[in-house]
Image (cartoon, rainbow, N blue to C red; front, side, top):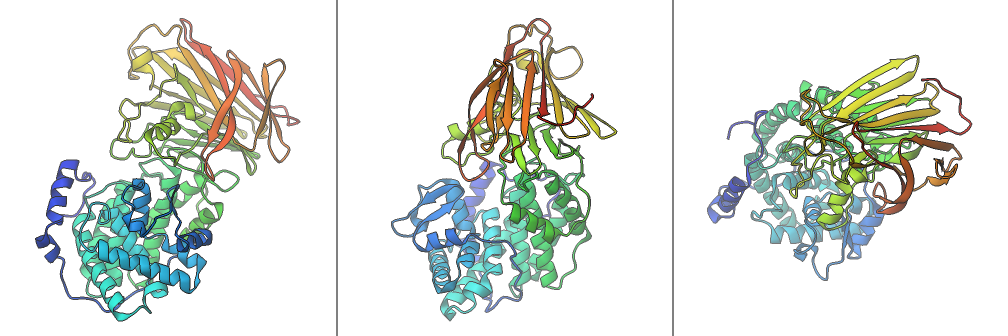
Length: 562
């Protein structure tokens, strides 16, 4: 098998099925036989914290993964009807961290019990359990927790575990480069590297993993340090994976590739780019807030001192900050096919924070079961941006990718004496409605004022991906979803909205060119679904389109020019 190049996507479904038929045969299984290791030659560190409460619940028979809670009557491995994300997380064994956090003999016994059951039920290939990314994460979890949970186990158990790890590693050496793509491919390569480093006699796998990694990094990391999937949550996982690989190589007394050092140096500042003042992540493209302590730890482990950028041109995001005011805006084209599993239709969506508090947000990713909920959370209406006729700016396909989509976003930015102007437009509504969405933002140098103008203009023969037409009488809505901690009330006979943050800061939103309404919304950013409010600025286009001006000013803040 040749090494991966930048143009190698994952196997198409037909090839994946054919390969699966081969992998399931006894003959293929026999090709994985080799001498059995009796120990591990390295013990890579695992610095990431687990959840002791989740560990305790597992011991009591309750398993919560990927937002789904399952209470198996017998073994969790028998829960074939559970959500696929839950079953995948179970097979990854990253939950060993939770048992480690709980600690004690009960945690050790439970870890061995579940591992022994897996070795009995899944010692041979199966589509989910042996998928390259899942296998990669499992091998990382087993090697990094081996000393704690398995080193002192009875000889027959350890022999079975080590033998199976070696078989999985040899299989992964054949599949890591092509079975999956995106961040999942890096997870597979990481697992292969850990296996080659830790299993005696498997150094050729380490060499292969290093070659694959060096070939994959330019493909997975954009020049500005962002990831092609354009998701803050993916960005964080990417950083953690790269830091883990560096730490494992260091623990195994291996040379750290310069490409890996450079990648960490570019990826870490982009994680900081996506953070709000509360330390959590912005809610773009399937991202929730996350744990600020865990994000701090990832950045500390990365140990990169570069400043946080204001722009990520390759990734397509803008960061505006002045005083305590922060605005993050999605100003890029949605991810290309093959990288768009996390894509939301939120082009030109923005989030606003003040100090350590969030004011305007996107709804975030739902972990609820069913495509209906998932698609609702990915829709344009679930983001703080403009939608025409309640239609998505990028149509979302049933396969979690995008079909009709924004193909061009034009951005201009200017700064002067601390004041910031941002102008952006996208053509997601050009073909269907003959309209371009333009969003202009102005932030005062004091951070007490944010002005905006959202306009719809007719498509001209300017190459922006649409056709000239009659844009008249189209309904539009500009939504500003509020964080659940924000209280809101209509004032001035419905001409303005007063917003109050928990810390006492007050903000007044005034609008011209649209009607203001308040409606219910839902927030998936942290700890499940929370009820909240959204401000809806609605109107209809006329023959020249539409223009809505709005201004968000802090009550008691300094007056600003602009």
